[in-house]
Length: 84
Image (cartoon, rainbow, N blue to C red; front, top):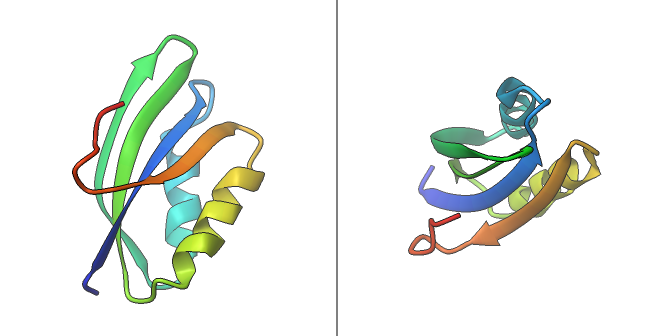
């Protein structure tokens, strides 16, 4: 696994972080490397970095995260842009 992908995720603070991480880990071949979330009022905002063996799995993961109604925003970010 050599490809590291960064996603910025915003979700309601009523949602358990385990729910977000379990969606990511449900995709075969993905492994979380780093989580960085902070509370911003009613939402948690943060960046998750994960390793993937296949780049083709990333759009599938983004789709799975976006269909979850508790997650309000998902976007792919570059390695250098890790601010909230």
